Length: 215
Ligand code: C5P
Image (cartoon, rainbow, N blue to C red; front, side, top):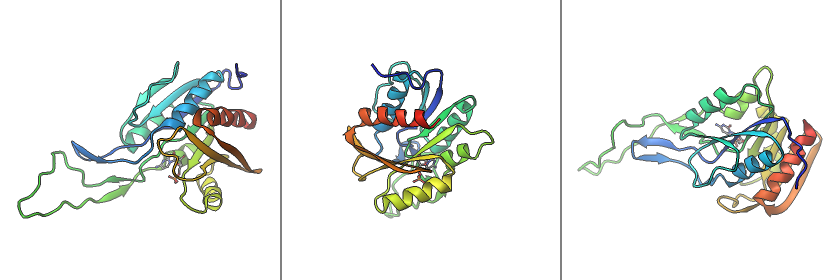
C-alpha cells in the first residue's frame, strides 16, 4: 500500500492525442496512446487525490474513481481544461496536443474529383494549453511533458522556461508511443533527476511522489 501523499489534493490531467478534423470523416492525429497520462491519473488517485482526466481519443479504460471528460480537438481540450481548472492544486499536461488544426476543414465529405485534383490543407496554430494555465494569476502547480527527438536536455530546459512551469518531464528516447514502459527525466529549478527505465505505472507512482515533495 502506498502512502497517501496527495490526500485532499485536487489534480487535473490531460492525456492522449487530439484529433483535428479535415472533414466529417477524416482528420489528423498522432501516435500518443494515452497510457502515460492514464497511469499518472491512476497513481494520483491511489495517492489519495481527487482526479479529473481530460482525454483525447484513446482505447483505454477509465481508471477506477477518476472523473474522465472526453474531447476530440485541441480547442475542445482547452475549453474542458479551462472549465475544470478552478480549485485545482496540480495540473499535469501529458496530452500530445496537435500543434496545428486544419484551417479550411470542410463541413461535407471532400469528394474525389474527376480531373485528379487533390485537396490542399491549410493549417492554423492551436493554443498552448499548458502555457495559458501557467500564465493564470494564481496557477496550480504545473507539470509539462516533452517528447524530443534530439538534444532532449537542452530543448526540455528551454521549454520549461518558455512555458513558465516549475517541472518538466522528458521522455528519454522517442519510441515510447503505445508502449507499456518508458524512461523519464525530470527538469526543475534545482537540476535534473532520472527515473530509470520501468513500467509506465511504476514511473507514474514515482512521478507523483516527486510532485508531492515539491508542493
Ligand atoms: O511545445 P510542446 O508541444 O513540445 O510541449 C509539450 C507540453 O506542452 C506537453 O506538456 C503538452 O501537453 C503541452 N501542450 C499544450 N498545448 C499545446 C501543445 C503542447 O498544453 N498546444
